[in-house]
Image (cartoon, rainbow, N blue to C red):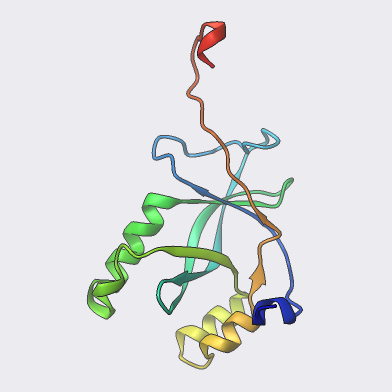
Length: 144
């Protein structure tokens, strides 16, 4: 059992890290309702031991409680931030673990919240979803 298993953490939201640069997901890939643009303080673990909180604009489906973050945009922003702070971790594996409460994000920006406290207080995703993007168009029966 890991430390995370012993901590009773809040669970909220579903998450999709969108790898498709040509798909903005203006409609939810699950329920087809229009997505909104909202900011979420994402909690990201970068290997080997770097925790990063970033208040990121994401697509959000209120019906499905699904947060959709663009992978290429997120990676570009992380590279920009860590170019001066810690350039050796650029390109390392990372995991978007959940979201922080806005007040916790503010405290962490001011250096008033340790990494351990951030992890204990964060809201873990209920689940991480993946979707296959199929561009619109006409297809023969055997092509899709």
